[in-house]
Length: 240
Image 1 (cartoon, one colour):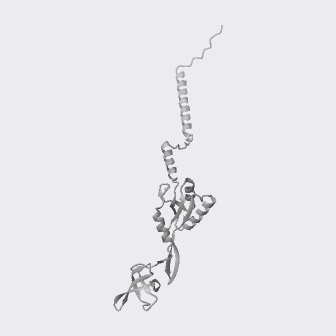
Image 2: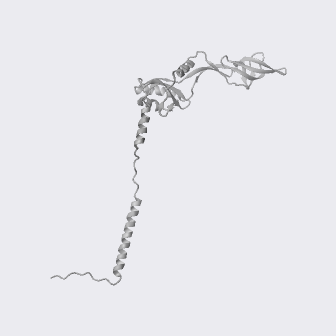
Image 3: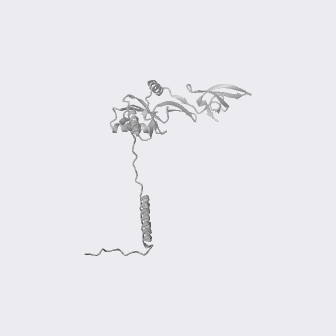
């Protein structure tokens, strides 16, 4: 018969001290685990699109697809219109988009510029910063045009390009096809000019009217204490 092994009795008060120590150790362990959890880097969560957001994206994408042939206007950085037209034509050919994008046009008109007493015929952009494109708008054709260097976007509502009205196109083409160039004059009403040719050469006068179609200018010349109206060619005067 074996004797039961008994734990030695602890002195009075010693058992309570041991319980307190165990309790403190447990609290320290819990605090340590909590601190370690806090120090762990937060897991990055990828944003998940809601059903409403998916619906909006679907609507926006479908808005580009009109399937109709027409003239559309794209906005470019000013001064890059010709470069944009050239780059776009190259992209159309290299990406085989001739069946969706047909013409690229930088609207211009001729002007007569009178500078330093000489006439110069120049081409002036009718709409600086804009290029016209004849195309059928689909996702593919929209992407080709929109992602051409120096293109900032289509003219329209949202991502949907707005086609030009037929009368607008005809008016612009008519303006481009005018054989007689317009005059580009450096003067404006009220400017002080000096007459450089004719019997009144050397006199100073004030501009009162400008006829750009005929290239004529009306001035007031002060002679003998009174102002006399005179009509001259642009080439006969120079800005003071």
